Image (cartoon, rainbow, N blue to C red; front, side, top):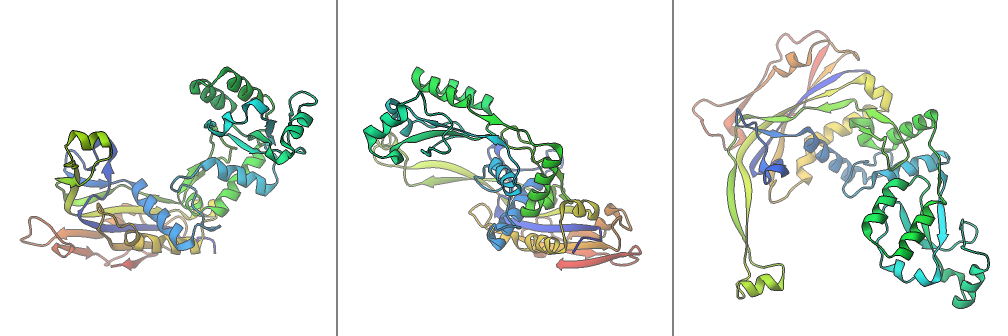
Length: 386
């Protein structure tokens, strides 16, 4: 199922009365080229929608799990990789919490890399001075009532120390947490172990073997870097867009203070931006050589085409109510290196406004010209959406 062909593709999609990709640095205005006025949608935005579709289609089950997903903690996947491979990352710390501090830790937020856990005599690395454990058991009558602070073997000790300092905790709590860090004995994976971790991540996560990833994190075991075989450009609108601003009203307020200030009127004003209509074009590339390095195969490729064709159908919101893939034109080369420059193939797909239409408001206002004459030898045009 290895990939033996290079692919280049053209993706056409449109938006009607929506915001395809707001810019958070510009008040969520639709992105646009300041000189030409043409709209832009980033490659990251398109990849996000592909990831979301694959997550829905495959239920985030391996080997189609998604590495970069909403609210994910990336380092957890790294740790899971080495655990699955049986590669030691060092010795974690499990320190018994002093009796007088137990109640305080129930309300103290711990830095990332630290957590509370149940006491396990076989795993706890430090039970304070001799005789304390018996004293605790005598008071509680049951060792399960005891708690420990767990520090992961691969935790970023320096970052945790900084977080403890900035939290401005009591002297006793600060001293105890710093003592927990002394029990950690991390181990850095060797080069060949990093390579095994990288291969495992490629096998289990669709987006890593498709788009690549930088997995050399400071706060997690090093899984190296992956250059993905599938790359996308920014999408650019065929014609200039106009961002329209709309005032909106919420018939409620968030706090009692706001309600009192308004005398019970309880209204909140806001605004949103939309593009009346825009037809966007993005270009993509699939490298067979890189695909064979990451394990991206024919099944993954088919899932990619399916995602690009249907990703907007499962991404509805008030800002993206009417977005749709309008064309997916795939140029398949008969070998891994390719038979023609990508730009010469992309130029064969030409969306243009119909004569007499100055302001587009629907996809029907455009004509899509597809030039299939004198195709380069060894190149085949596959129309996935037309």
